[in-house]
Length: 125
Image (tube, rainbow, N blue to C red):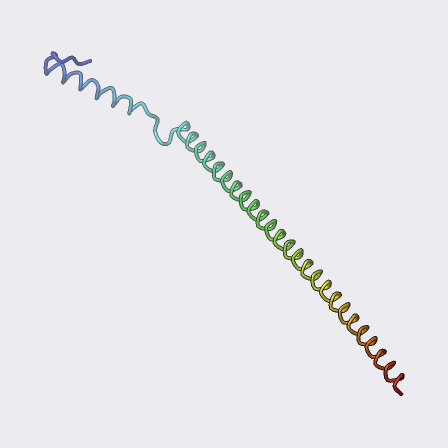
């Protein structure tokens, strides 16, 4: 360790020693064709491929869930539309029934009126 009151030569020597230690550490690193380096690189590639496979599987699952959600929404919309159509058809049937009843009542009143008219005619004649 270099102190403030060390001489310039001591600081230069300490710097040279530090650089030499760094160079030694660099030289001790295994070469690129070392089996350990190759094995680590292969392991890293395998881990990366596994990560990519997991991400692809996750994306497929997410897409499947999205497809299921869309199908459920479409089914719910279709069911709501069918229910609305059923309600509309029921209202139309009630309306037709009411109209038929009104027409039948009017026909009955007309028949009574015609019968009264015929009876009055019969009395006068």
